[in-house]
Length: 343
Image (cartoon, rainbow, N blue to C red; front, side, top):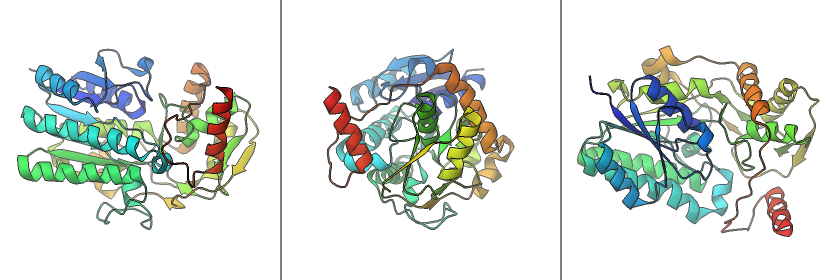
């Protein structure tokens, strides 16, 4: 029996590395592409062929499709800093939209791709009232969400015009092992853990009463991987993640407790973001219900904490190519200014 060949973009990143590992366990030949701008080589699973490069390099993408004749494309490469996307608009659209179009073009031209699996985001919903349903009209309110929704719409166009099948997942607030805890603009649980390991206070925007449903990676990655073989998922959109929302304050207390420290919180100026965001998952339960583990928040954080302690704190990364400074959260401005002074 011939093994299917799958491309995983963002393979060295957080969700991508877990999806690649799931696919290898399923018997796929996995080719991974990552530019290592936010991922790490040590995240690459054993058995995957790794290619360092960017989805924005159309020539490289086309060469890979010609060489490997992919059966499935799992597109997870993205810079998913939703709040920061307002201030890096050109970078955001080039990385998250144009790079995606390179992959869609190559998939259409190759003629071998049975399904294009795209990891979108609940950012496409904007300030729609939660719980968020797939039937809601998306109304993204930041460039990251705009880019994700544009790719979703383009996939529908490609299916209508060329017959390219797709499955779209909208995950939210995913955390777990292999996450980049050194990124200061996203991944709040990783930020908390990194701050704790450096004996720094945990920073929270606003009053910490924002609510999110924090989703452990084991409830997300297997579902994305299985979209290759479950044809009932083709040409559909699925929210995927945890059901129970928690405040960011509660998250901070739980994380500190599991890390074995007293919570020390530093509240900073509120930023422009949805106060409450969590999804309905009725659709994903119909097609992928047997894969949902419903890992409790404390258990998932404990697993991630054990991994984080083993690997240690990471030096916080400051995004260098800011394009717009107007209305940037003051704490980010101070971060950038301190970085410039240090240089």
